[in-house]
Amino acid sequence: MNEQNKNEQVKVANNPKKEATQQSSKELQTTSNPERARTAQSKKELSQFKPAKQMIDIQKASVEAAINGLSMIWEQSAVFFEGATWLPEEGRKAVRQFADVNKKTLEGFRCAIDSGYSDLEKFLPL
Image (cartoon, rainbow, N blue to C red; front, side, top):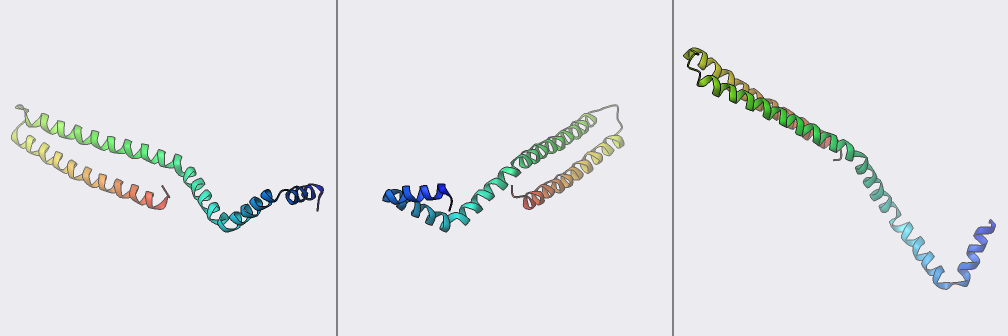
């Protein structure tokens, strides 16, 4: 044994309270140390993924805003051309069909994006 360990043993032997606390401390470490280690490790892992989660949330919000913007532009265009007296009826009908197709396609795209983000959330512990 080295000199420092001998000095600590002498100090503990002279102080029974300290000896009891050291024993209970050692018991606590041996019984709950693996659990504490797992908890600390899981907290560390979650903190490692926090920036990734923030990036994904920002990306998700920006994609949602882009989809909403496209939807609004197409709806406003359809409304504009509906009221256009200079456009023949066949042209207005084509614009309505175009707007309907775009709306359906955009909803399908939105569903695909949402399923991709839900798969990503399953993959990463977010």
